[in-house]
Amino acid sequence: MTTLVTRLMSLQLPRTALPQTVLIAAWFLSMVSLPIALWTVGEQAIVYGTIASVLLLVSATCVIIAQAWGWRRALLSAVIVALLGWSIEFVGSKTGFPFGRYSYTSALQPQLLGVPLLIPLAWLMMMPPAWAVAQCLIGSLETPPRRAAFVGLSALAFTAWDLYLDPQMVNWGFWVWHEPGALHYFGIPLVNYMGWILAALLMTAAVRPPRLPRRAIVPLLAIYGITIFLQTIGVGLLWGMPGPALCGFAAMGTLLLLTVRRLRAS
Image 1: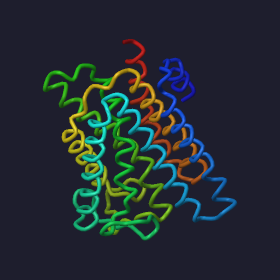
Image 2: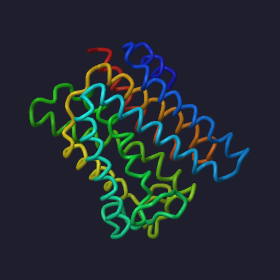
Image 3: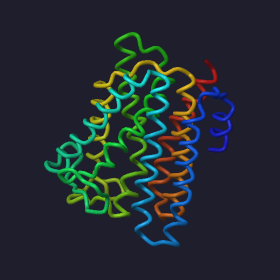
Image 4: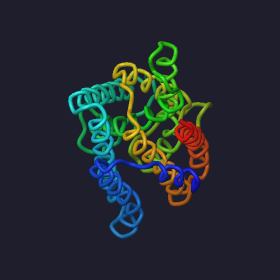
């Protein structure tokens, strides 16, 4: 992880990167301060800390893609991801497709028809970093085979994050699984991860992201790397779930390592 962070830091950012840098720094501080707030304020700090961290990170990713694509294209992409995210979660929580049977608790507010409004923002905050990983690994997006490979890799890069996330969120009581089934991942049904892949495929195909310039790639990869760092320590040490922490580190870390090597070589 130290090597990955060092390599990312060696990739220079332009001076126009100040807004997203401030937002990323604020997100990082909100995540780091969460355990301290839990110990001093109580369990309600987890809810408020989660809301703050999502809002800060989604703001950062939206600023990054807006500077890369223009605000109109970025806003359209954000609306597509957010609407699809809410719609998929609504259908999933009511029918069990495509994630398996689960339901949200009342912990995260506000909610629309039983789905916390924070959830589609969480989809939005990590889709652009997944697009950055996929673009670096695929290279050109001009041909249909490469575009299809980009969509598939984006879905995998995004779903790798859930190896950390779902066990952690269930542990915090944000949602519950009704039927984990015989085939599960630390209490999370394996079908959930197929659902994540399917949803991420749909979102990426619907948005059809334009190429990201290098000035956008670097901060998005930094977000991906910082997420690995924070989640590995948080899930593994602070929240006492070393299994999901190791699996998430292996999946996201491998993708980031390959990505940074490819980016530096180019």
